[in-house]
Image (cartoon, rainbow, N blue to C red):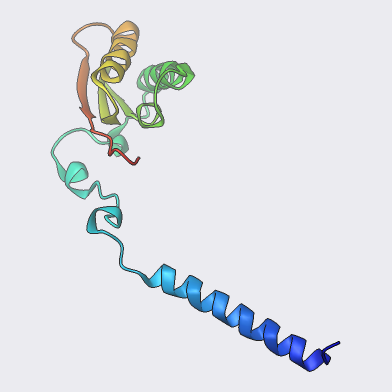
Length: 134
């Protein structure tokens, strides 16, 4: 049987080696495309209606609530589609944000048109291409 000091030394050395390996792996440079942070700055700076311009008018709030509820309850839509911005002003609706396909874009626009009517929906939704590893 080995003395207890020897066991503790081996344990400390083993843990040190393990931590060194983990730190080494963590510090390895990542490919440029994988460390690019999400940045909507350019999109947010573009001219147009933004969510902070939503009026407190009860009619506009009700329109927004109904469209938002319709989108969120549709489980066939992606998370991106569920997070599309819905902005109602004076009975007109602006839809903004990324979705995964033209079908999702059309689906969301149809939901808004069903609630406010044709010609009252400004569709600014963008279809984004998903990366293969996403």
